[in-house]
Image 1 (cartoon, rainbow, N blue to C red):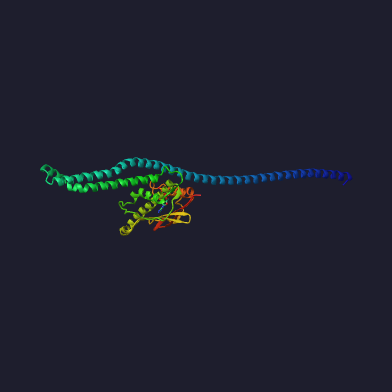
Image 2 (image 1 turned 30 degrees about the vertical axis):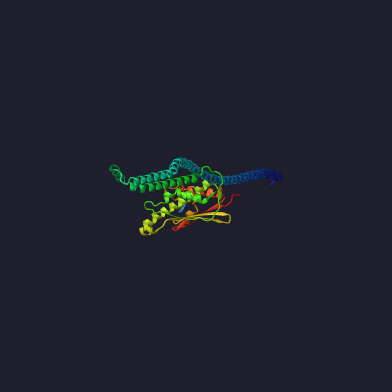
Length: 356
Ligand SMILES: Nc1ncnc2c1ncn2[C@@H]1O[C@H](COP(=O)(O)OP(=O)(O)OP(=O)(O)O)[C@@H](O)[C@H]1O
Ligand SMILES: [Mg+2]
């Protein structure tokens, strides 16, 4: 080959080399830019994932908050329903008690005079009979037709039983007033035994024997407790809820055992026991029944608003949740439940003797 040809070849090779070099440079820069884009994309991707995680956390927090708000709302709703129910009931009860109070007092107050007058008139009659042992025929006929001797005996007895009846109405009216205690929204020193008695008086109808249900025996073991500073009306509401639940459990138990054997049913004595005690600085009220008892899984739920095992229309499931609020929140006390399924249930109310 000629020298010129060599040079020509070298030049061509150099040119190709330059072209390749350029291509290399270009693809290098392309690679760099691709890498950069990739990095950017990856960073963006990571950012998106991070943001997604964050928003998922926020959503979880929000749904937890919502759940809590819902629970609070439910509690609030139950509180409102119950307090509305109670205040309406309280107003009604207090109104009726007030209306009955006056006429009953007329009867009760006048019976003593009526009895006195009757005794006077009967004494006068005796006097007449002594002075005129042999009255004219027309009088004798009248005396025989109305059986004066019987009237003399029965009249006083009749007035006595009217007086007893009026006295009982007065007691009921007093219990209704004690129970509603509308006038006492504030904390006041109260006699808890009086509250229990008035609640029992109001529930008397449910304690009495009814068809299929023998009379519920009430055992009271009142200890030596001081007057307690509390919201009297609210405390009565708690007593009412717990004792009514006890009665429900007894009725249910009687239904169950009657199905099993009428003999066991006949020997069963439905009983509610209420005892009070002072231990350290706590006034303790125990209310127990020998009813159905509560299964363990159920016990954990009984204080929840709207929890009920009773048929629709019978229970709203509010009694115990309201009672819990009243004892724990309003009175800074404690409310506990001990139960053995099939044997019975005990509720323990603990209230501090003195409010701080
Ligand atoms: N003494 C008890 N014996 C057996 N179960 C009871 C007793 N007290 C409460 N319970 C159970 O606890 C549940 C909740 O009671 P709670 O008083 O709150 O509601 P309820 O009685 O069902 O309805 P409400 O009182 O609102 O009419 C009852 O449905 C019942 O299952
Ligand atoms: Mg109840």
